[in-house]
Length: 515
Image 1 (spheres, rainbow, N blue to C red):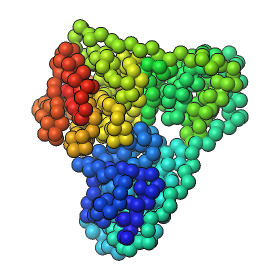
Image 2: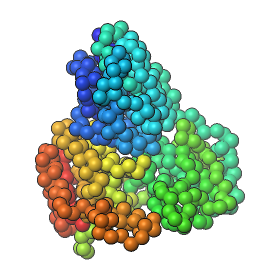
Image 3: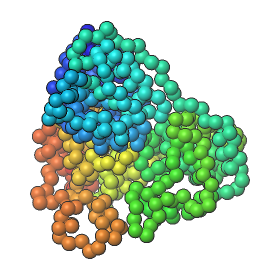
Image 4: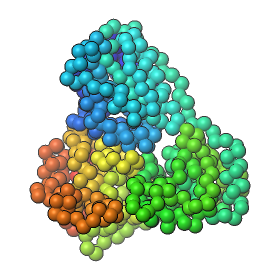
């Protein structure tokens, strides 16, 4: 057995069952080991950003890490944007990066780089194996690090000679540190604050607390105390829809957040941080918690937010049946002009129970968010780190994690171009993903931001930097060229027929919505 085989066997024995890969020369022994070890599904991506985005989607849905396999520093660098998003989501990922053989590094070959320097900003744990004899134990530690609450990226650097030299065997799986209980003091302090009559908001980001059970406890608290229940603008994963307690999502723009929170006197955080704006704007605040408001930490990211909410609900005497879940409402097919809101109505009409939504629709996503609040229950994943190009590979990884569930990617056309290679992998793996491309031929959010930052009167060069005409993208042709069935919708009737068909079929589909 060589080091690469010991690595793959250790990953499988530690519960890592999928590897999203874009390998190169230095990783060939790992690739060869895939045929020698049962239990590892290998998924090829044509771009590293697809591999890392898919690992993020897999981890958010499966609740455990996938592996990535990337080629040297430049390959890792190609995947950094979606690793940034995964880091912001606290997604567990075992990030394996091949490197030059240890004795080759001295020659400064063309692909030599500061690999660890690339990895450090997105990794919670980094290690470079020094010999084939340590690779297996290094892999077990990487999986342990990735899985320790709340989840993180563990990057294992694999020099080529540590992969091809002889190794003794696999290493046993290591124990995983799950969420710690929230402190009894914090639970008592929040319960006391909820009785003092002050206007209170509870901001939840903890993945376990944004499940049906966690939101039921939050709903009990709200019914008893009149506290508002909130979530971040972009949450890693939240269960929503019929039968689930709804909450309020913090808006995106600075002045909207300030208005949204202006009456809050107490802000309770559940695995969250106080809200700030995505960017700084001239004359607008960055810190959005009202001045003088008290901030209380019920649970930190490594703690059990769901259990903490249940404990608070019991402590304040909230009735067990006090939460009010959302009712099921299926909208009619709209008759008004075709736009992003009518698209949202149609999605809500035909969305099946248990679906998974990967949302990078940006300015076109408000309609879907509004109307699916009463659709059958589903899980919704957002653009946690703000680095666009996440939506399609995130959906791809979710489909690998949950093959029995329908996956829907809501994607802007500009962001979709960053990682459209994910469509090829969807076709290759026959993944049940329906991709909705909102085709407005523009980086629409940047047109809004251009006005907000006070950059002056834009001229033709400025506007051309935000425009996707000349030539126009043709997503039907792009999808067909990668083996995905695709169609174009220009009316409510066309979209309804195409989307209903996709929801009743299996396999990858793409619908280009012309806005």
